[in-house]
Image (cartoon, rainbow, N blue to C red; front, side):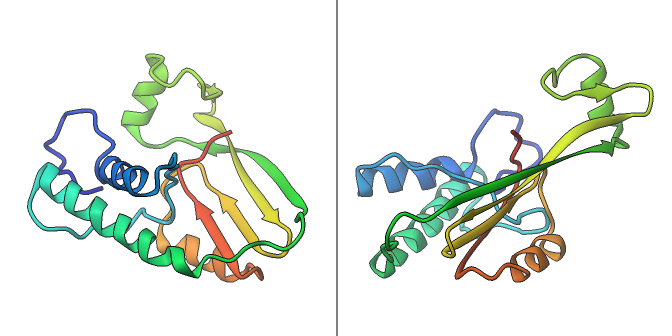
Length: 163
């Protein structure tokens, strides 16, 4: 994200400006998904919200520039997905504290072994698109090999996804 750690306001950071610009230019609803971002630093000029706005506009322009190369899918591609559930140990003391006071009620937390239930999903749209989801912010060293293992022309790694 672009905002500094000292910002205590609730904000969607640069994603707000990205979505706002694309929705205005495309006259359509825009969805934002995180990708591989655990060790990525955002560009942009300025500080605080000015930097968030600048970076949001940089990313929006990149999306707009890519639109002329759109490709129509032939026929009706098969949609496939498979979820994998697993338990993960929690070692972050702040996350543990949040779990104990009920700040994250949707997670299935096991106090005894300090684990919670997670899910990752593989999905495919015909032979055109393959992707995986991860429950947190994945680092590039984890996400890029996953994308490289996929055979489809278009490959996605979506982070911060929870079923």
